[in-house]
Image: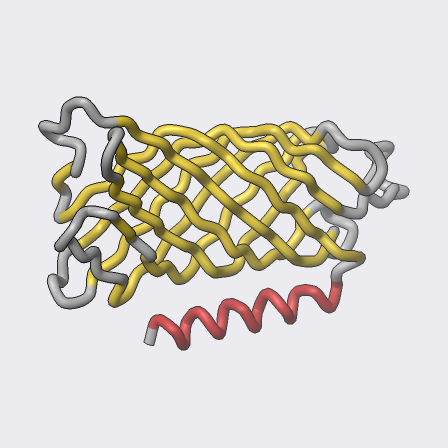
Length: 202
């Protein structure tokens, strides 16, 4: 059922591109503060002497502006990682997102975006005898805001992002909730067209 809904959403994304102007593309990386919970219990509770690292990776591809409005319809492939480690071992919790999204420019130098879609896990560890199961089912979403510092069709995005992924783990049926608040930097290619209705360069 969830896969059917996802396919319908992707078809709607492709249908929306009929009224689009040109290619939209962005790719980048972010770092920040990650949280991973298993059945609502933070895995860092009671932990001492370990380090953490939160990473965000994202690629968006789509079309726009739509009918002269500074909105781009996109598909996103992204993921967040939460690494917990010391001098000897590590735990790596990874959640991925695949789904449609919207990119909007309320003004020419500010981008607001969001995506929602299917999620899966790719957890890993080097602890002997410990096995981290993959995802049985899941969903993820994100919202972001960034300054667009580029000129012409090329942009440099610098901003902040919040990502949440919720997955049911196979075998154990436990729920893994993973979130990340990050600061990111991205390269973006997008078409800005001038409009007779506005002096803004769209």
